Length: 275
Image 1 (tube, rainbow, N blue to C red):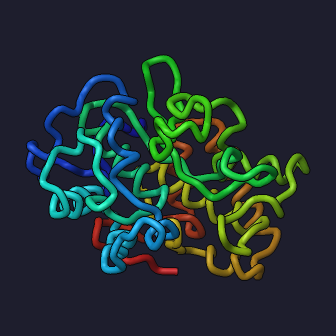
Image 2 (tube, one colour):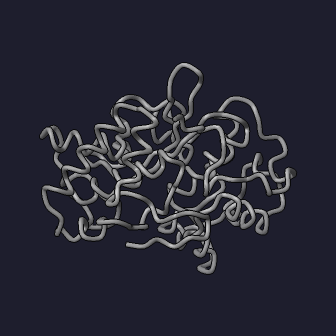
């Protein structure tokens, strides 16, 4: 059984959104996402940029259609157009990514969100991050739509190997003793270590079955894993999941994503996580 990454998922369905909100969007994947870097402001940037505190509400929005509605209310112009700071919503890297994936799928381009760690923000650290993968017919290309055109990384439209590690890639590297897990975590916090890698592996798996959760959604045994109370049995499940993700077989990915410890609680865009 294949996974159709050109079709919308629970959080990336834009079919009921008026088409004028996407006027001028088209072409190759980087062009489809060309204005995305100007659509959101990170929460930690709000005070510096003068973004009002009531706008933080969009940081909790899961569905891309709702994000488009929020952006349209701030500025009723197509999402093909770059926006001034005062007309941007608030969101994390996940919001940049999920809206990008929704736009790409709307354009009929195979695309999926990946949850993991970027190595290009802080020297010596791999920071919690989400990016886009899209298929050009020959390979999956990793693209960071949050930083397109910013110069933060040399080729954000085709990230170099090692620039970004998915949760599964980081987990396998950790288990092989190839990385220092204490350098993997969330910017601006003390949340670093193996538990952060565990969490991003599970979120990345959910993304691969087209359920792109919020970065702080937890389910199954994730909360216990963050608290350090899971043991070898759970890590064994994660070993299996990481190996299956690396193998890339859609049927196996679907099967492991249905494991009782890993299955996402989301059945609709309005569902709440159970953890």
